[in-house]
Image 1: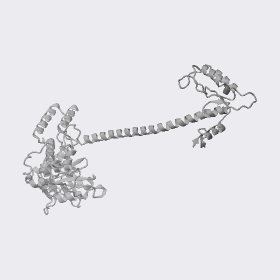
Image 2 (image 1 turned 180 degrees about the vertical axis):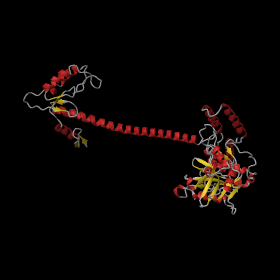
Image 3 (image 1 turned 90 degrees about the horizontal axis):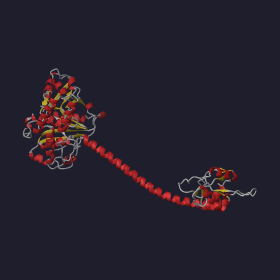
Image 4 (image 1 turned 90 degrees about the vertical axis):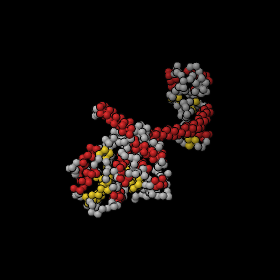
Length: 503
């Protein structure tokens, strides 16, 4: 079907289209062959041509002027006018007065002629040209669409790739995997910033730098972020000011360590390990496991210890995640790294994954019940304050980790965890050492059920020590990942992490 571009009527064949154009769209106006001007008669048209086109400029296309009837070119507009008058004058001459001769105008251009046959041939040329140009346009359009689609897809892929790389680098920076230096570099950079801001004297800067270099050389923590004696102060407080607490359990010998200028923003896992280790070192039960450790290691030393555990075969997938390298980075560590390090020291551990809330409003009462069971497994009848040799518990959630050092069972049967947070500075922790300690100070430590509303928590708990045979048999070989569940380290027949989720 062909569609008339003037009125929209659909015609089946080209001859019908020609007849339709001649019958429906021919007008009797005379149009200028050199512009779009139309006149009611040839006298007016001649007057227009003489006045408006005495010296016609170049053709719109920029080439020499062309004859509107046959396409012949001339050097000037006057030559073309002379050519039209000599070769096509019979088409321009007005009809003799009174003879009733009809004029025909091309519906697709400005041509006007007095011969119907000539006009039909002229329109045929238009239609033929239109058909070929339509084919070319369609073919070119398909090609252009394909090219455009490919170009858009390539641009989208490129943009997506840039966004993914940017997000990947952002995550690497967030988790300390961007090779931007580790504890030492961050310490020096932050101390220099403190000097520049006037918060640290240059003499203090050089002293602290020397102390840090000595600490790193020996692999031991400098103790500048440690607060000792908090557990003992809590024991005294609960014995004298029991009030709403029915019973309380406390892990003995736990020192608090907070983040320093060298690990601020990423060192919570390492600081919690230092807290846990401080309790283990004060317990003679673990002397043979920790005989090579007499002082609390510094963070770079802990990183090297985890790398050594990886070399023994612990958590190969976790090691691969860190490219088998922690030392000299600001990489975050979590429950798997703590478990691998403790087990490599022949300490019997378990990881429990509280993978979803078990109470209303996103709370985790089952976690509190598990901690109570852990501490109170050997209850002493009637004792209100139990200073237990049970080591503290490492607790991990998204973006942070802390250390559970005890639990309160209150008179209304609710439970409250006592937690050391490495984000709490020593100035605040030292307030707990005062004789006039009260409930206000304990707000730093107390966490009720409604305070823990992260979606998921993992805890690492020490449950005795491994024999050398158990350590070898329970070295994990495969299928480990960040959110592994409970580890049954005494499972003799398996070298895989086995899972038991709570709930």
